[in-house]
Image (cartoon, rainbow, N blue to C red; front, side, top):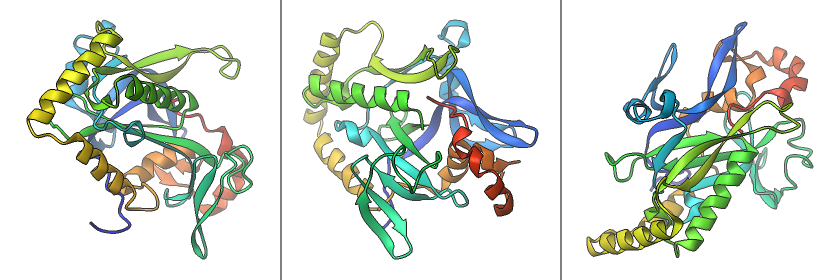
Length: 295
C-alpha cells in the first residue's frame, strides 16, 4: 500500500442537496429542497446526472427526490461518516488543519504537528470562518456494485450532527450490524432564527419506509448470518477500511479541490477559477459569509 495516500471507498457518484450557480461571474452554492444524484463527470453546464437519479425520481412524489434507499458499507459508524473540523488552503484546496475539538493535525513549516483543537469558534488559527465542520458520508445505493458507494459531502452542522447520531444509534441497537440495516436518506426541513424563519434543509438517516425498527434489526441479523455462511467477512472489510483511512495524515482527493473551494470559500471562486491573491486579501472579511449548499 502506498504510504501517504488515503485509501477511501470507491465512489460511483455524488449525492447533494444543493448546486452551484453562477451570478455576476461568481460561482456560488445554492441550497435546494431535494436530493440530486450525479455521476463523477462534470461538463460546462454542471455535473452529469447518474442513472440512479432518474430511476429513483420515477416513484418520487412530484418527481421531488427527498428519500434515497441506502445501506452502509461498514458496521463501524465512524467508517461510514468521517466528520472533522477542517481548514483548507484557499489556493490549493488541500487540508491544512484537521481536528475533532480535542486534538488536531496541523500542517506547519516544520511539518505536521499534533496540537490542541478548541474548535472553530475559539481557534485563532481558523478564526473568521476559515475552519468549518466537514463531513463525508459513503453509502450504497442500488445493487450494481457491492463495494461501490455514493458520497455525500457537507459542511452543515445539522446534517453532520443528525447523521452521526443516527449511525451511532443504529450500530448500537443492531448489535454492531449496521451494514445490514435497511435504511434511507431523508431530506428534512426546519426554520430557525438564524435562517430568518425561511426553511433550511438537512439530511437525516432513518429506517426504510414501511419497516419497523424491530423488523430492521431482525432483517440485519438474518442477512448477516447469510452473508457469513457465504464467506463474506464483514469484520475484515471494516479492518481494511480503517487501515486505508489511517494510511494518510489527511483524507484528501484531488477531485475534491473544486468542490471544497466552492463549498468553503465561495467568495474566493470566480468564473470557476480561484481569485487572484491580491483580490483575496480584499475579500478576507467575506470568508465567513458564504452560504453552505447543505446544512
